[in-house]
Picture 1 (spheres, rainbow over the protein chains, first blue to last red):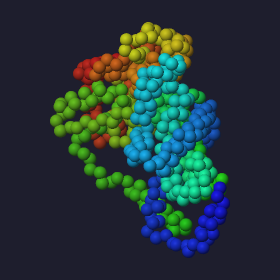
Picture 2: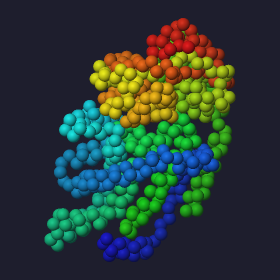
Picture 3: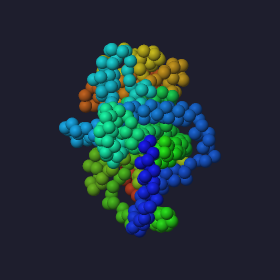
Picture 4: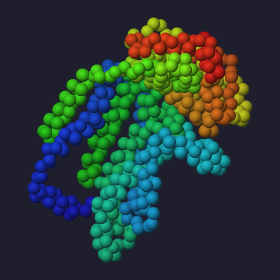
Length: 277
Length: 256
């Protein structure tokens, strides 16, 4: 990391006069906080605590948790590999039609996930445009496989990474890259040694967002990948299924999902965001 | 930070008092019968509802169709149902266990499983045992839901071991995997096959005798202290009448 820049910023922070927040801001913030936290706290109230260990350490729950963690990790890596370059192009390139490109990239955010899953099915399913070709050429089909889960998650989570990374790139500006260029650095060299380290915190927070979205993904997965223990049944799918028969189990598993999400966001995010990697 | 927590406590306090007061100001709508019914009853009950409205001028019938387990949860949590028709005794039990049924539920129809395949049945599936063929991609409902429980019962009774590619959370989801061509066969209800072919032929249904060993019973009950309990009883009569039977049979149900 460019240590002098960080140090300079810290020095500046120390000398800043602390500006109080307007009192009026606290009330809407508290209402918003209540809206988010109260329903989740309600889950805790509904939980059958004595049965909790039995419910969340059942074989089906552990299978689902393992599958969720593995697929979400792979999907997050795919989001970085493919979404990262999209963000760079959106933030830095001067090609025409960027506005349209950005709108298209954000589509999965507006699309109901089930519709996204159906769209994937129509493209990559056995009777889909590309799916049919894959079956005749390679003899396998994508739906009902773990790969389908990863594709569904990557589809819905990519915009989260693109949006936050593009924001970070825009905030960082191009001054340092310009300096690097005047010192004779090639575009690739400047990108690797200046741009990437500069937006690493933004990339990390985008990756955490994408990972969190993957963990919670339900609609696209059920539509595209189906639901089979150990292969495609992630934690949210198991929750949805269990609530049919055993609401207590569904609540317990939801709690597990909440804990995973909180750990991911609370532990991973601040450390990365503050750039102390 | 302190002010933040004070504001939070204030908001929570307001919310709690608001909850305590409840909804006292609701005026009963003039003659609206609200029926909560299993999703598989959508077509037949909608038709019966229209007939009921014609027979009883001034009455509006409102339906809430959905997964029986969801509906049962809604009723237990105060959902405004006058009449509840469930797709399984187990989901009905959720409601009757809380003493929310006015009298004992009656089973009014049964629904049986059918194998659903792509149009023309390209894989030539004829029997339930054919589904054990590993070259055939089969989707079933998960054992947690009624159609999956019935499927499992047939597997047990016949000794046929099906290895599905997916266990779907509801019967329409199972059907969808077949109608989109991604699975070769699925196990759904007779009524689902008929409903899927209503507009245009989209699937083939293959009946198998073992399905009789796992009939799914549909209980119906008037909700206790329902605002429109009389209307609910009248609608129940219509469902059980000859006219009602005809509509249900046309949808593929077996009237009991």
